[in-house]
Length: 100
Image 1 (cartoon, rainbow, N blue to C red):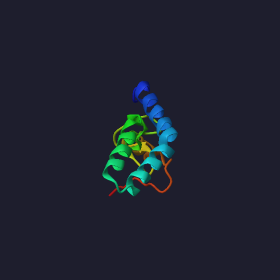
Image 2: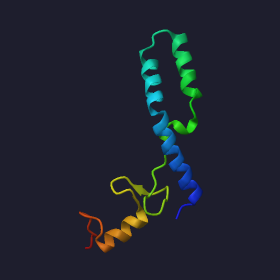
Image 3: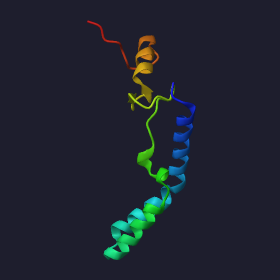
Image 4: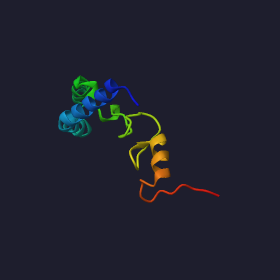
């Protein structure tokens, strides 16, 4: 299981992304529509002035059962270990253990 502090840090990042999403998207559209290079530079500085953790690419995909950050399958939101265990138990609809 992942450290509680790392999971809490990721939750904090998700909240910050939600809080700054509107401001970030408005600045990005203004940046794309600006023609003057100096104006683009000023808008870019405003985007850079936003907190780092407000960027959506800093959110880590984690297993919802254990909180592990690596080996997470997007379809289920589970890490590979939990996916294997739950597939063996038949808890995942549509997933069958292959045997030959």
